[in-house]
Length: 103
Length: 158
Image (cartoon, rainbow over all chains, first blue to last red; front, side):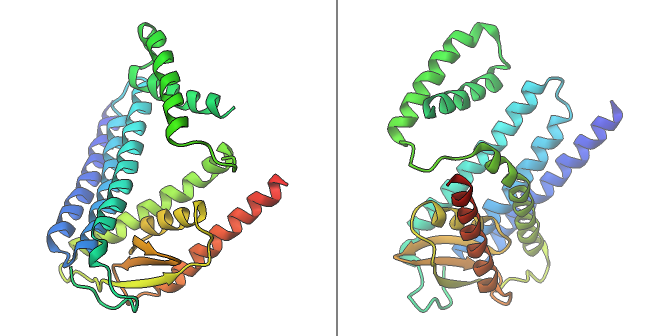
């Protein structure tokens, strides 16, 4: 049992590091789209680690399946929302030359 | 066949949510049926068939790239010097519109350092976290990989 708890603590802590990193990126990155990088990629990985860590506490396969489902749906939602947010900022797109862009 | 596949998908989601409680099976069957019907109305199946095995075979690589993308951006965000050089690449894609382009968009949004943020005609706008890296080379590689996968799928279908 202790081994399972250790796995949970390690994995959840790893997940938290990625959530902290995503938030740091949101606060520190200079422009709109760089912040989207941080939120979509780091947070999704963080949630994956937390779900995996919690899975070690589950006693039946259905709960593990439910956790996997939560992660997949959250990832799908994050990817879709990121696309929509990026598209909503389309008027901030660079000109055709693709030069440096100010957020 | 498509109806059965979608019903199975929604019913398995129901089973996960209810831990296959026998009390919910009747309601779950009806709900999954209604969801399958609605999904066919909202998203009719295309002419191309999705092979579940080939999707599953892509999963490990997909997970690995997600992890690499997350680690990369997390490292840059937490690094005191914040090593980023954000900028844009306007990439003229040779992939046909539709599924293949969508795949490229999803792949690029997962890979370390790139994020697709819209398109105009054949040009997709890729936001790069670090323009000092060879991002264009990475995009070209990814595009070639997708084109190859689709070709292999076609050959195996014929």
